[in-house]
Amino acid sequence: MPLPPGYTLVVIPLPSRLEATAFFLWLKRMKELEQQRDALWYGLGMVEQARDWYQQEIHQVQQRLRHRSETSGEKEQASMSLVNHPSLLQDKIQHVNCCLSDFISSADRMFLPHCHTGQADPEPLAPRAKVRRSQRQDLEALKQHNYWLTKEVSRKSQRITQLEHEKAILIKQLLDDQLEGYSHTACDSSTFV
Image (tube, rainbow, N blue to C red; front, side, top):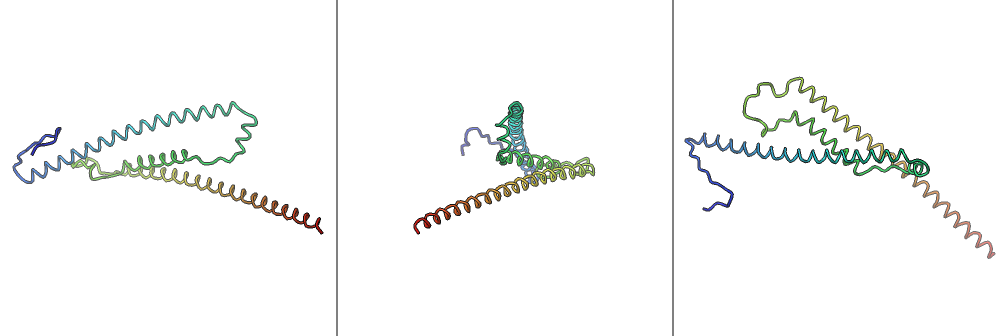
C-alpha cells in the first residue's frame, strides 16, 4: 500500500504487548503535548495582538480626553446633557477582561488528566498557601464580576427611568394634541350654530 507524500512508515518490533501499549501511550502523550504547545503558542500570539490593541485604544482614549479638556463651551455643555448610552465595545471589553481574569485564576488550580506527567510530584498538588491564593483570586474574580453586574443593572435601571420619563412626555404631548384638536372642533361647531 503506497503512503501519501510526507508520511513515513516506521515499524518498531516490541517484545511484548505491555511494551507496545506503553510505547503507544507514550506516542499519544507526545502528540497531546505537541497540541498543547501549539495551542499555547497560538494563545500567546492572540494575547500579544490583544495587548497591542489595548495599548492603541488607551492611546486614542487619552487623546480624546485631552481634546475634550482643551475644548469647552456650548458643544461641551450639549454633549454633557445627552444621555450616555452603554457602548457595545465597552461591554465586550469588560466581558473579555472578566473571562481572562477567570481563566488566569482557575488555570493555576486546574488539574486536567492530559497535564499529568506520570511522575510523582515532589509537593502535594495544592498546598495550603496555593489554595489560599487560589481562593483569594476566586474571590477577586467574583468581586470584579459582581462589580460589572451591578454596573450593568445600574445602567439598565437608568435607561428604564429615562424611557419612562420619555413615555410620560409623549403621553402628555398626545393628550395636549388631542385636547387642542378637541378645542378646535368645538370652536368650529360653535361657529355653525
